[in-house]
Length: 275
Ligand SMILES: [Zn+2]
Image 1 (spheres, helix red, strand yellow):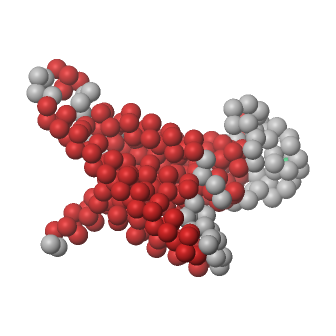
Image 2 (cartoon, protein in one colour):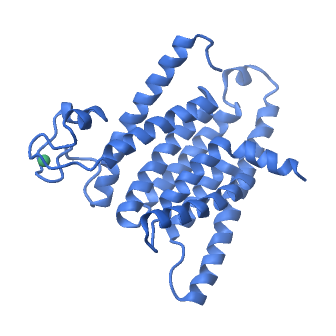
Image 3 (tube, protein in one colour):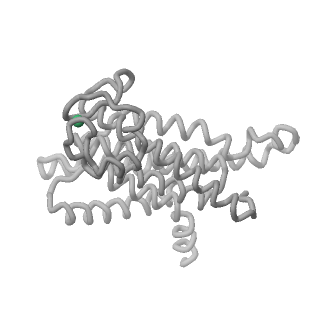
């Protein structure tokens, strides 16, 4: 799947990293607008303090921030480093996905999912809400890439009459995904309703449950269970780090999903081999 040529490999990772930070910059802007109820389609990027329209040279991911020493070129206000950090995070996430899955349909579907997870995490951090649009795009992305990953639409399968094997694989993946989504999200929904009734306060947001459903499609049943445990660990770590009782759970789930997609198969295979 990956070329042997060392130079080519470095080049591919470089391109993937740059793609990641460019998408990171776009998602920063998109999620800021969503959190501040601005139109995501129209209007040019502007300084959130002085309102000055930003020029192309102000919008180069990471480099503009470093060049301007973290300040707005026009009014001099300090820009929070989190914008640069999120760009960096997505760049590294892209590299990690390609390192594990090579250049494949699966990798491409996870790259899109990484963008969605970053976007919904940023909005959730800002306004404690996960917009449905991220969930819907996540489901659409899963549906689009499912047959591609299974190789049903691959050129060799179209040419060969024995397309049945990938079709079985497709059904397997689809069933496992649906089981993961429905069982995890369904049991969380029931648990949270019971807990809310007993305690009289909201435990898990509706957005979090929808997020578990959407990501469960990608992970399947066993990996979703692993991810659920990991999400709780992330949630505890996060609330200890920020010293708050109420934290947005979306970013914790997103980090857990990302880790699960990268290493989940190895972990669940190892765990099941114990029995
Ligand atoms: Zn400014």
